[in-house]
Length: 491
Image (tube, rainbow, N blue to C red):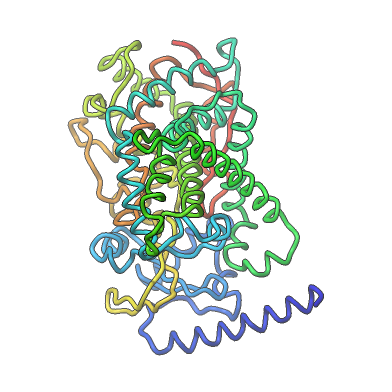
């Protein structure tokens, strides 16, 4: 069958699916939404550069719980803090399903923590949270790992001082080495060519998913598999990451001491052996490979991207940078390593870090949820097999909860006395039972790395603050900030 015939057959199948989905939906009280076209749904009505903003605009007409069609896929979108919190927290068990995002499903081969549901998800999440905490995530021991990475981090700054440099790989290598210590039990040399290649792949994957080809793949995966394009080279690169992880697992097997696990992989291998005769066990090789890949990719890119964006903010607003340095100098000085206990004495610095996360809005769609059965929500029925998008963008930029949502304003997290104040609408890590497992690690890394950097350097760029544009370069699955060459001047 040639390509044109294949596409024709695929089109007929999609029409049938659309018709079936339409008939099914008529039997339920679906949330309202804009009228959709066959096959392509509401895509023509959406801004391809910032699709999440189109969803917010739809909600002004159809309300905070609405139905849209991304291609032929029926999707319920939750807009605003109240709707998102009610679903993810108050009805957490109903919204626990993970959407089968085609790109992630193919990358993980359907295994691992990130894309799983049911018993597989429960077993892997419980084990992963417990194991990472056992190895120090969110605790004092992890502070020491981050502080050690911190020391190596500053040795990698360009010489002579004052020379412009791209912070992308400097921050990426440092952050990635923290998760590598937890997962692989080792820290990679900053000039390790294989390590740098893997970081490059991780960056390419994020950019692809946030570009038009990535959007099309997640909406029309069958068609994109048939067409030429960068999706094929991206999956070839992901296979390189899988092979690297498989190699590390085999190395662990050869040196494993069941009495003294060194890291996450060791612990998983021990559990695999303990449950080898249990047919209901999810502790198998494929789940190990894909979960390690989940942790490696997510633990590297999101935090390092946030730090890179924070540096752009420092350059854009030198007065904010100076005020942070004054507070840090008063509380810690320029010699002692910061720790998490310092956070309560650094309200302005803490507020800036929170505002960086809010303003960047790194995963505006969140990772989609999925209706594992018919869900009753706010008087509507969300039918089984519906994709659910808790639109984090609408929570982090909602005027009801933020006085100036489209301005970078640390005061969003400060009271009238300059003390740090929490805001319930701060949800960069999502919420509920499927919130990010690495949240405590990310919070620790952001504070320690950024405070340490400001203790030692003042950041600027030769073109001046006005040259920095905080609007992301790519916006879709993730908001990918622009890259600038910056100058780190020793204090």
